[in-house]
Image (cartoon, rainbow, N blue to C red; front, top):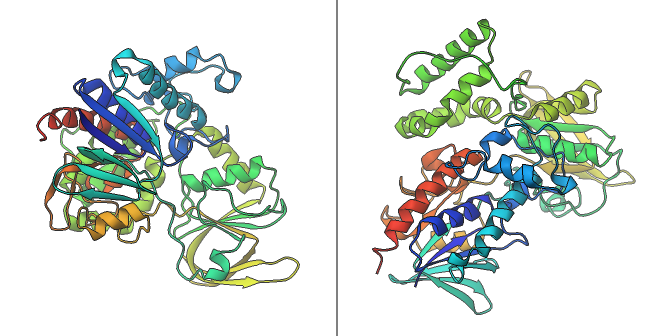
Length: 465
């Protein structure tokens, strides 16, 4: 019996496993491995806060392209009050924990199918090393526990943000610093204490909502280099059509000009700019693939923050809460570069953060009792400390992609060795493949990738010896 091991059972890994079960020959075993307690939801959808909403309308969240209403239909069958949504429509923004429950339910349902008895195996544990002897792969969990597979897929999701430069051990190892926004910080926080959040993206929105829901009444500061908050989804779902021209420009400058022109024209006609961005979604991976290396670097250096806040938007209800917190003065957004951290002691011990304002260049400082790092996932794999990643890099079985957004993969999601060779047994799916595909964080994008890779591996596994 051939075995495909999927390392990571968050959304990407679980969805890939479901598609492999659908497509692979009955003689193929799928081994799904997860180091955390729950299989299915992953960090983003395992949140226990019902105020954390999906950033995509429910009507676009089905796990299966051929069943576009699957998530909506599942929601309609739930009698549990925690999953009930008044007036649920395809445009509703529902709690992320509900989507996590949906993915978990799909996995459990697949396990109950008689056709899958003996085909799907779940293992809890952290794969710390992987050995490729030219034949089968050996996955090592430590303490003498191993699993053998013919093919392994890295579905490892996102790693926590990297610590900001200049943050010394006296702060890194203290209760004043929270390195991972999804892992509760050690020690209780005074509800009146000032807080600094590093970053102003969607994870910062989650962190602010967390604080507000816990009754935090102290000042909240959010600091990033440009101070840009995610924009809001159009209340009515968006209206208006973009450019009628047939072809999309292949150069970054021409494409940026077209998006600005289309947005202005749609808004002049009473429509919403959100429609222009959404109409580009089916083509973003194609656009990324055709951009030159120089254009990709320009995009990452200058345009990425602007793209992110327009492409990855807030649900209207979350936008309202953020605006209310800003209007009352509790939430302040700062644009600038952090220059220094200094711990101070005493009755109101904490950290003084010095930063240089973006526009004026003036120095400013904040005294806070907690710093929450929401600067975005660590994606430079040359610096990822996880033993599995370090071992694969040291053995030359994988390499970082040229943009340092993840690992280098082919169009078929095969991982590339240090020397550029294409692996026939190691693959990757989800955010780790951003360097090749760019848009690989939202459910519709990952769903398409999992469908493709599931079909590819179903054929590929039959040829492996």
